[in-house]
Amino acid sequence: MPPKIELEVFSGLQFNINLDSKRVGFIDAFEDRDVERGIWVEYVYILEKYRNSGIGTEAMMMVIEKWRAMGYETVTLDDVHWESSQDFWGKLGFKGDGQRKTLKISGSQGVSNICGSH
Image (cartoon, rainbow, N blue to C red):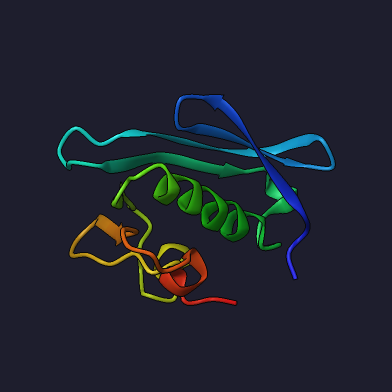
């Protein structure tokens, strides 16, 4: 089970990822001008010593749920490190050809169903 984290709004759709009131990462995102009701994820960063602990996955599931509740329908990103569906983004349910990956988040299903976890 990943550590208990909190998301703190930094600006607009950008969030700090906090663990025990200490910032351990951030999610840099904004409205996608190319997709109606879409979010573009520019960057997700976790401090090196906290990587592979589940914090990034938990933070993304939490922020995706927030965005879905705000009425957004898709989350898109370009992943230059994408190698397989077993990678970080694939495990969260992102799909697509080439580097551009998209996750549909509209509807009443919870993020745990969208992301295929829990």
